[in-house]
Amino acid sequence: MRSGDYNYLMNTYGYYVGKTLPNGQNPTTPFESLHVDHGKSVTEVDTSAFYIQTNFGSETGLFGVPYTGNLGVRYVRTDTKANGNFVFNTSEFYMTQAEANADVQADPTGELTPRAVTLPADVEYLENDSLDEQFLPSLNINFKPLDSTHIRVAASQSMARPYFGDITVAGSGNAVLRDNGNNYTEVTNEGQVEHRFLPIFDGLSITTGNTTLKPTISTNFDLAFEWYGPHGSAAHVSFFHKSLKDLIIYNDSAVPFDYSFTKENGEAANGTTILTRGQSVNADKNATIQGFEFGARTYFDKLPGFWSGFGLDSNFTYIDSENPSPKSYDMEGNRFENLPVTGLSKYSYNIQLMYQKGGFYAGLAWNWRSRFLMSTNANGTGQDNTTYNHYSDGNGNFEQLHYALPLYGSATGTLDFGMDYKFSDHLKIYFKANNLLNEVSKSEMEILPGKFYARNFYEADRRVDAGINFSF
Image 1 (cartoon, rainbow, N blue to C red):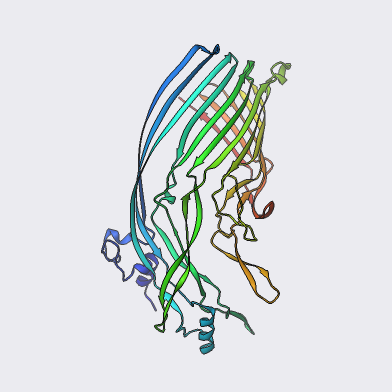
Image 2: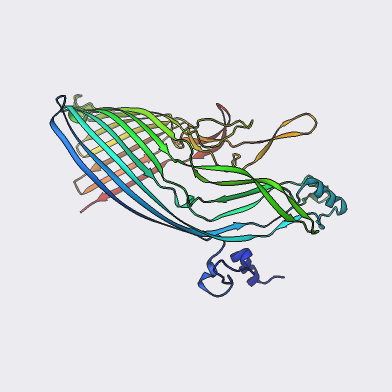
């Protein structure tokens, strides 16, 4: 029986036992590097930036319309250093079903596997440094044709850096395997007994970070018309267009790969297979986001007495977005074209009924959004290179199709309530209740264009929060 010390070493260091770390040390020696295990990943990001801005304006204005504005540029430098271990996991398999059949015929117990291949685990230490520099301009102009009216025009560029998890050099790899056709279930007096034999080789797969990722650059154009009336009333209409360059997406790439294995009987197994690499990449095409928003707020202060405290605030947003780069395929193997940008609903609105008198405030709000794309690489929807036995020719033969279903959040709405009472500038009590209707949201897979199938249901529950705010 193996000792507890052995089990501790294997559970903690796995295949490092008996191996040498990239720095030449034995991982089981009593030293600090003992805990540098296969999951090691270190990413350092240093950023520096400066901004130059000039303000301008005119009282006489353009065609008699006064305006103010600013023009600037921001310089951003990002230095990234990453190091970590790439791990290839051990596996044992047959190269073909025919070789598996031959071994099973010779030994039905499956204990003798001379035609099988064993890939040992391996660890490779990797490191990479990168530098990125960006100049981001910005222009904002505010025209004021009337005291109550503003026309705002803006053009700018902004950036979003990759997440730390996207730029790590660490990763893992493994053989892609499918079930052995000799597997069977035996029914005995004591119940069912599963007989499983070594799986069949079906390719190689690796998942890594990407230290060459660029930040996403958004080029933005905005136009807004705003009106500010008496007693807090206001209305606005705005239009926007954004072009996203180098949007960070997760994609699988499949390339031919030449392999050379050795079977247990010493025979060589050489050939070409498909190597699938999963990692975040910069999109090769620009994504676009465009649309408009309008909203209004008013108070019914002309009503008598108690009713004069009521008010209404509402807005509506329409977004048309396209992201042509992510790879997603329906259940028939056809690629989805021009998916929307993740996280954006085409339609959304909210309506809030307010009441305010003296130090008391209360609001009841309904918030709604239409269906929105959550992911094109969600686990369990085929993005792990699953093949699906879809069509039969009637003779037991199936056509294998690759599918990668986009995952959406369904249309959903919530009713929220909040109120507070302000005793003074320093003391306030509040009460909040979210999701009063206990709305159940769900995620949906688009199995064919325009056809959605429920995947998960989420019940967020009602949330109640109350407290006291005190400031000095």
